[in-house]
Image (cartoon, rainbow, N blue to C red; front, side):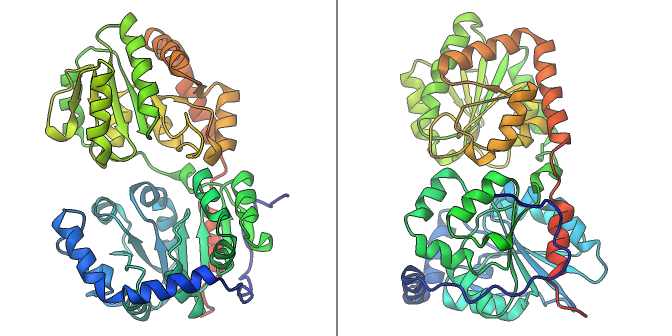
Length: 442
């Protein structure tokens, strides 16, 4: 299967009537039955500090801002990572005269970050719950001319209702993990029904395009356009926090395990014990993908004989492991640590996380062999000497020690990674052209 990297040159026809799905019908019926409980669900989350105290009614479709005049593009990026990746795309879209953009996100952290960073002309709101009332109020108020979902954000009712109103739907930077693909493959009818409602799908590489086609995406509406992350910016870093942590670390050799998942912390802990056998004052900063797991991870590390300090408690990094159990600080850890193992890659089923962020921050990249989400990128990095694959704790410890002791080798790894990323196809221009081609003619 081949895909042209050229942008769409003209508006595409609306997708044909998508296939029906018993599971989609079940989802629509179930969410209709849950409609009276939307406010209760949000209030309970609010009580646990998981919702925005000032703006949570937006998730019920209670909107206070007016719709701007003229064409409106709605773009949804669920969380911080997706939000940062779309900043260059947002700038490209609002640069076109008369175009306004509505950006929705889901998490409180993403809202705070995006509000401060979006270009002028972008309205930031919370995505409504996937319930009848919130979805209807949202779409009726904003009346978007084009809807853009980033990566793999599939809310069945929202997608169904958007398509039913004749609003063109775009899946931008389409990405689906190995685990998610397996889950969708178990419900092929629902997968085809959801993917069939998209007018166009833009995949970052051929491997991801093939994964989507296998799930039922229409190959005629799917095109490889390069990644939005190629043009992404460095993650935010609080200079004061960075200076404080650096002072706490002092001259200790330090390395990072970023975005780890269950099962990976045990391997990382074994590697760090081996590192400390050679370099007794070495510090591991461990930033799990889900900070809520901090308690279980800390207990696991203690059992492994490693003392732990927790970032969330304000503790100093004066232990064997500093558990970075906070949100929104990954940029700080990449800046601080000259070596970074990128998690989600040691065990099958997750597919790895992206290498753009450590490279942008100048951290040498280590990864496991299960990187199906970014297979093309990691293959190029490994071939160019821009990343180092590791298969187990022993290999990880050996590479970490070598890079700690050899600054020139570390610098060469970082430089090679940046050279590879500089040649990556930048999907921003092609994706923005696609989106703008779907706007109604004035």
